[in-house]
Image (cartoon, rainbow, N blue to C red; front, side, top):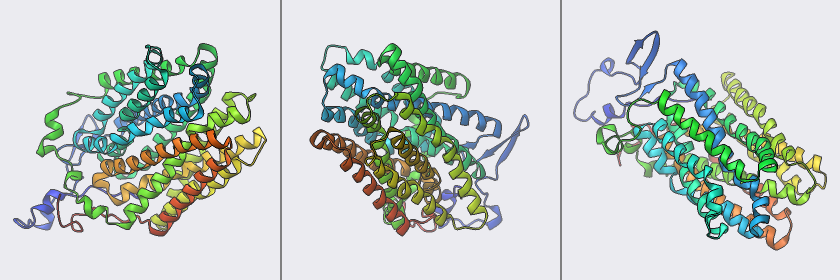
Length: 467
């Protein structure tokens, strides 16, 4: 994968008033200090690159919190069938509860990325994790406070989406601010595995907890573990105040993203191709993950939950690492970065769509699990496609731009989750649902192959007007 360094935009903006000699201008990575044998690289006045031992520690902590995030996020879909029976929900009502997450998810993406670019993604991540951890832990209590469970669970899912919406923009901002160019690929591929480990936990351990202790225990487990994570990070890794209004709004701490001409960026066809491919992939992925437990429960009622909730994520772990390795290898061998990304995205969306469509054509439980596993495994190639394209096109505002992308995908995910529940309720068939998901994937990958690029479009010499 190819990543680019941050530009010295302040020096460029002063060029009309004062033009220093070429060798007097420092590069973003020129200021280096050595403390206790650890090399700490200064990016700008606000951020420093983590030394390698600290980067490894943070990588493991970010992997863990991403794992817990997905446990929390997928707890409701895993428990949806049991909760629907207990509270008397129809398929449409279940779709409303599941889809409420994406309404909330839409609201904080851009804000989270912008705040992370300004005050540091680690602090934004700590605040958001604390909030969604508490919300997850009290889900059972909120379901039994005396109001209609449909109302309280819909509101809980909405607020969970609001609180978790900043997670991935914060990770992207951290990657751009704290990790050197040659190590970003390892960080992103490792964090992607956190998603699949979370799916394994909630699918395996969560299913067993639900059978043994009831559905509330699934939420207790994710919430309490996430609270422990925040305590460890706060005590051991973060220094100074977690949040300061002065640091958020101070002009001196403004990140490069605040000086980017967003109108120019959004006129670039390659940026729109990246956004469209991301929203198509993410919305179909969200919908598939939301309804798969219900699909298997309805089609194969006597099957063990842990089988279809665990096996696909065992497949996803090695395929994610394989996708990252093969894409890096192809680029090192001289293949074009854009071509490699398009190949990875074709596997993630084009080939995976074939197995999504075949899922509704089989009556065999083994074949269904195989189709889901192959679809999920191929989808992990997205980590080497669109997911890293934002670093190539706009590294200086990666968090905020990724927030825009995730906002679009959350909105379309909301529509698809609700539409899927409505179609299942009306027709009683899964054919239309999986056909639509495959079609959306095909549209997204076609646009990306046609218009996608790996060139940088936020260069100061290209953008002549500041906003």
